Image (cartoon, rainbow over all chains, first blue to last red; front, side, top):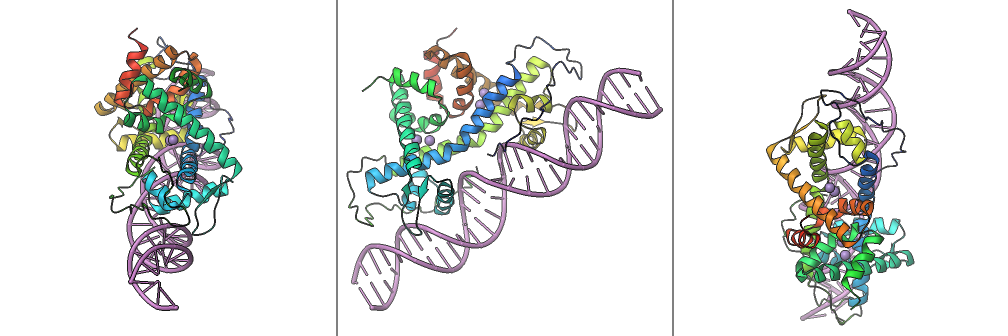
Length: 165
Length: 165
DNA sequence: GGTAAAACTTAGCTTTGGCTAATTTGCATT
DNA sequence: AATGCAAATTAGCCAAAGCTAAGTTTTACC
Ligand SMILES: [Mn+2]
Ligand SMILES: [Mn+2]
Ligand SMILES: [Mn+2]
Ligand SMILES: [Mn+2]
């Protein structure tokens, strides 16, 4: 997950470049640039998925359990402690949390804001799926993955469909 | 993205383990196991995202352009050629495509089946989003990410909502 | 207060999926 | 047939996320 600034140098057009016998059939494919943009956006979104899940969970733990301990983060994410440790280091490096050795973690202002947005988004997606007729368990499950790929526009439509409640 | 068989050894329950002053507040959190399962399912899904996008695109290219050349795959995915080369090697290793050096790629039977499923799913998600009121461009964009996190149940509801057309 | 268990850290390994730079191959055009 | 360009490959770099094993620190409990 890097997308290391491709610098968008050339990426040759490669159109109508008929190589082997394939003289440009009836090509009702999307424009290559559009398609590439969509995939790039998805890769972009993927880069924040893990951080978003951590921040959301940390906020929840702090609010409902009083503190966010690495061990609880690990249990709820279903990963091992060292994985959590390393990811928390990255979050701290990126200024989203603060931490002291052998202590539970805290959100920075930036981290708190992202966490709030994620919680709101998560809630909307779950409520939307429930309203659509899905069972609670599947809704929670699918929402956990879908939430990271929902644009502002789509989220607005989801919210509208879900109703206020 | 590995999830290397955690063997589900112990992962200590760590419940009611009141550490610092936080005597088990009103914890309306999801059951830790449920939550962990959801996250694990998402990580599982993430492991096939890239393969699914490649297979879907390869099938499209073969059908509409006569063949699937690495250069076209790269252009449409918005990545560089060596990235495509390496990923194609993985797909070949996993028995999803066949390839000969300096030639375009082909789907194995297994690859073809996955590609078909992905195309169908992609179509349903796009149609669903359009029906919800989204514009074409955003629909395509969001679908590209959402598709990988839609369970069979949810897909069925999406299809129903989208109508037959 | 000492000790054992739990929690956390550190070190080190792996795979995936990006990238650039340099090389090799195939093809088309002269 | 030679040559040049486009396409593909190879080599090598990097970061993210996963893991195990082993060490350290904190906490709980007697
Ligand atoms: Mn999530
Ligand atoms: Mn979430
Ligand atoms: Mn996709
Ligand atoms: Mn797709």
